Length: 68
Image 1 (cartoon, rainbow, N blue to C red):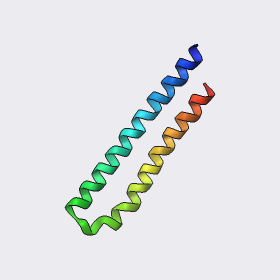
Image 2: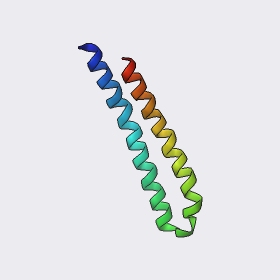
Image 3: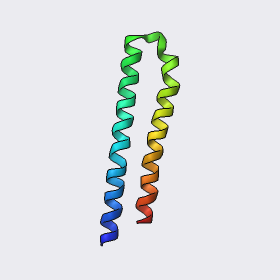
Image 4: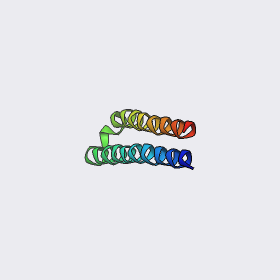
């Protein structure tokens, strides 16, 4: 029973912060493109990289939850 609770806590905590980070990255990228539409191609790649790195942290948390 404790192992199930620990795994659930790991994935809950390890998933919420990357989700917030991805949301903030997307929000700020859309804000930047909205202010300067010509910057869309310059903003896209760093935005996607930032989102991918944040998602990788969530995947690590998922792997830890399966181990717990």
